[in-house]
Structures are given as structure tokens and as C-alpha cells.
Image (cartoon, rainbow, N blue to C red; front, side, top):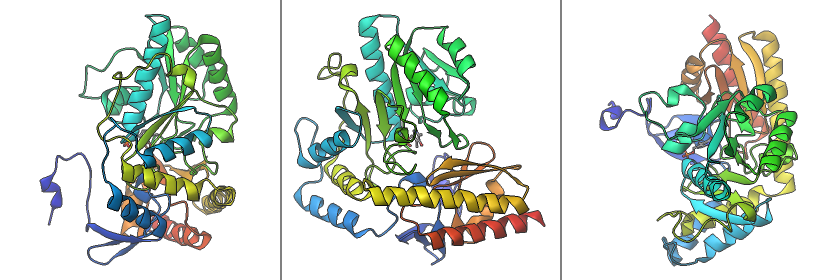
Length: 392
Ligand SMILES: *Cc1c(COP(=O)(O)O)cnc(C)c1O
């Protein structure tokens, strides 16, 4: 049966529906088993069937499932405290998704800077970035293909080439910038890591111009880079950070982490809001995710597994010249191919391995952070057999 007929065709889905998961494996309705190196697009950091997550849901559901944001509730307070203790931030705003977190960060930035100077409203983002699907986040996304057919876009958005200090300087001279938003590791646009000098340049510019530096860590944050926050890899601290994907342990949850200076004087009750954001079950799960991921040993294992994955991909590259380059950090690794990786994704799925595409020609390995070295080897074996079959 073609289930696609039920839907607005926003996704290109095929195959048997997924029924359940166990560890790093998924099973479809026909009982076929898949090694999941896509992890629900970096959401399922703890894999499937995690007992702590399951117990957290059960315990919280028995107490209360929804509380409006007119009142405090304990899981929300506990997670806000956890995020503040584990980061640069002193203020938290909860929402339901990545794109909403970026919308909020952009709104907070504009409110802050326009309160100082009415015309200080421009937002800078970078080519090949991805920031979400709602209007401001989509406009900040520096890829034309995401904008086509959706004009008119919100005003005041500018773009510069990633990691190019000179070109960025030129764009920065063309307007008065409220905020600069970037992913320390561009996850959807080809797994491109920011250079240290580039980040330091942006930090300096923002300090000198009272511009808000926003790091979108929706995909690279919360342990995926081998540090709790990706910014810790570079020692460049943002003014705001957006988090989502793995934050709610699989239940929708997003957050803006902010320095007090940029929100406490300018944002007043009623300026922004959300009905569902910071839901008790999602926040309770968030606390459980942090209790596992925010652990030195856990994080250093992620970093180590990422290094090994990169080394083994480099080995494979020696005998497979269709791999052009290997990028990334921690368990966010990209293998750039000299052809559209769609065929690889398809064939890998047939052979029981789930991978994701990134950008035009990069394959992305974003497995659950709990994946073992043996399971990574199993994934690479299937990957090699797919490359070999496509060669013939
Ligand atoms: C997925 C993603 C988003 C959007 O998150 P949604 O929850 O899908 O709205 C934004 N930025 C980055 C870097 C992402 O990976």
C-alpha cells in the first residue's frame, strides 16, 4: 500500500512503517531490522528502549501531563536549573521545537538591540546553514532552495559565506546587525565545522558592536560533538544558544539559553509565549537525558567513538575514491561523496542500515550516542558493501 496518498507530500517516504526500537536498532512492521545511524535525525541520543526514559514518562504521566505557562511546575524548574548550571546561560525560555527556539532567539535579539537603536535590526546568517521551517528561521536558513515559492520573506536578513572572515566583514558593513546566528557545526548543509579564527572574529565583532551571537546547537549540542555543548570545543561562548532535537528524550522540546543582559531588561510578560512549551513530561525527560549525557565518561566516549569512526572512514576512503572528504566531530560525521548520496541511503536501508543525507553530496552518520564500537563497525561494513555494490 502507498501510505503517501494520505499526506501533504512534504516528505519522500517509502517502505514498511517503523514499529519499535531496541538499543540502536529499529524494527518495521514486517519484522525487518535496521541499525539506526540517523537516530530520528539526532533526536534519539539514548537509542530505543531506555528504561530511565520510560520510567520518567510513567512517573510524570501519573502526576500531571500538561500545566500551562501561567504557573510554575517542578520538571520545568528542574530542567531550567540544569541548563543554567551546565552552560554559560542565566535565563531559559522553553518551547516545542528547534525552529521555535530560533524564532524566539531572533525576537529576543531584535527586542534588545532595537531598544538601544531603532534601526539595529539586521540578522546575519551563513550559506549552507539550516535553522528551521517557520518564517524567520527559514529566512535565516542560508539555502535558496528552502525559500523558493515562499516569498515574501521577513525583512532584514543577510547572508555571508561560512568561515570566510573577509566576505563576512563586507556584509557586516552593509547594515546595523542585531544578531548573528550560526551552527558551530553545520549539520544539514554538509557537516561543515566552523574555524576557530572565524568564531573568534564573530565573537569580537559582537562584543564591539553589542550584537547578539546566537549559536544554533539544535543538532550539534547536548553531547553529540563529544562535549556537552559544541561551543566548548572552541572556547568561544555565545550570548544565546538554541537547543532542541535530543533535549526532550524524544518528546518535542526546545529551549533558548540566554545571557541575562540580552533579555532581562527588554523582554516583559506578554512579549512572547507558548501554550505547550516546557511540557512536564518533556522537561522531566530532559532532566533524565542530562543526568545521563552530562557525564565526563559518557562524553569522552562519544568523542572517542567519533574519532574512531572518522579514522575508519579515512581507511575506507583509501580504497573508495568516491569518498571525497570526511568532516565533523563526535557522532556528527559526514562523508562527502562525488555523487548524490540518495542511492547510498536507499541501498543501505535495503541492507538494514539507516543513514541521513546532508547538503548536496554528503552522507551523515548521526547514530544514537550510546552506539557501541562493534555496532559502528557493523554500520561501516554495511556502508562499504553498499559502496561496492553501487560501483558495479
Ligand atoms: C533540526 C534543526 C532545526 C529545526 O528544528 P525543528 O525541531 O525541526 O524545528 C534547526 N536548526 C538545526 C541546526 C537543526 O538541525
